[in-house]
Image (cartoon, rainbow, N blue to C red; front, side):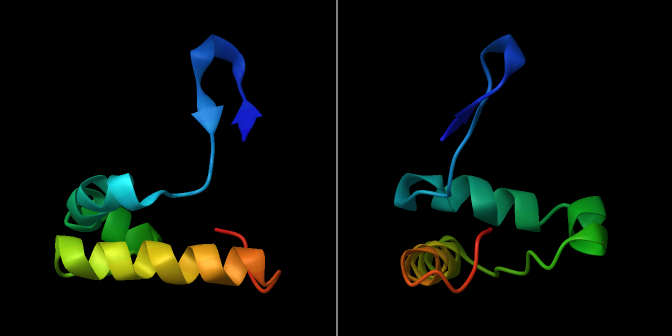
Length: 62
């Protein structure tokens, strides 16, 4: 986790973030500029889990 000015923190996605990830993925602008395509909160949870596994295996960092 990285602590930023203004009290912000930069950290990996967590399972509890699935609803937020899903909501962000519904925004047209976010969809235009990011490959954030999740069609349900459950799909968001699955994506977060894949990201966690890839991070631990040192294959990716998102």
